[in-house]
Length: 184
Length: 373
Image (cartoon, rainbow over all chains, first blue to last red):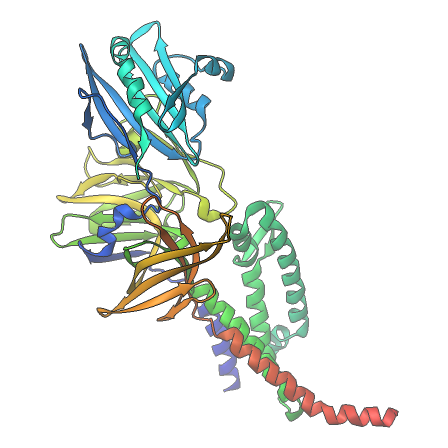
């Protein structure tokens, strides 16, 4: 009895140390449960913005990471305009501008050079940084970008098109960026 | 042989050394919180069986030390010279100490804690774990229901290969990132990258000191779907629009979310109220008025700071809040602790044991004192 008790104590302690091995679970929930219904409301603060867009621009379904996407027509085609937003500074202005420069085939600029090409613009959201990125050797890709550094997040508006498209839409693009406002 | 083992394991020296080692762990664990944060420190020093010093010297962690202490206390009860009437107080104190350690073990193994983030008007019946993640495949093609296949955190370590026959699927965990940074691709992605990874990349970012502030992500390779869908997918916590694919004609999406524990009742947040210190932005108090819905019966309850809701083994504390643009969001810390009562019960038992020990020895002590006088 005495020996058995000692064994039982040792065995119980061993069991307490064992982990459960059920690491794959499967279950069903009705589609109209709170999980399904409130899925989109899971992020506590929804950052919602509004804008005034030129009539010719068409809002299109963009990639998951985009807040909104537009097609802006010009003589030879459509420019792609995207709005993305990330929490924090999202790497800052310099790495983002250099990333865009890479997309149009230009080597990265120094911080000073980026500050030189930066233009400060005004909008309903406050001041924002505006960049016109052109590769003189390649007319096929050019970028216009606006970076709004807000309190806890950064908002990017980017236009990608040919140089010709960029030149014909630039004024509309600046007007669009300046019209951005926070909803609510 | 058994007697020798009992003698070894019941040695009071083990207890002394383990207590001393716990003091060392508490000291260094507390200091480490400054650099690595509360959760990482707790995991390294207290919730581990061992950890390494200097990268290669293994030393016992809190779990193994407390386990040894429990074994030591348990075996000390088998010392034959302990079972005497005059030592009954000591026996009771030992039993109390053992209960305290067992309660700690139960809490460590079976308890769960997390939070419930509810916006005003919302109803929720699950608790999100603070730290553990889960990878979820959701089948959306069933008529009335969503079917969730959930892979828990222990399976999500780098290099793990999960073969899930039911979906004829192989999942290779390529990179489980504690805190991700999302960057747009500069050049066109290889065709092996699918969905979100087609345009973006997930990069590791230095983890925050407080683990709850991290945004975890995972890069997985899926095989067994078909040539156009097999490939590398990336998902991160809070991804708004997840990647989708088809398995046997059913449409699935994948989600990487905090481990979800369903509770047998729902909480509907009616109103969140906060009172600020006058002239400041500092909250003086905040409270959540909720409907607790169970078996279609609803009852109204007010959860305040220091006045938690205790129901069905769960305790919900008013932990925090989020100011929203149109509505407020309450954050309730939810704890299910099976060992909750052990510290109270064992403290009472130990107190009784000490009292009995004192009472038994009091006459002797008084006698000795009168003799010296």
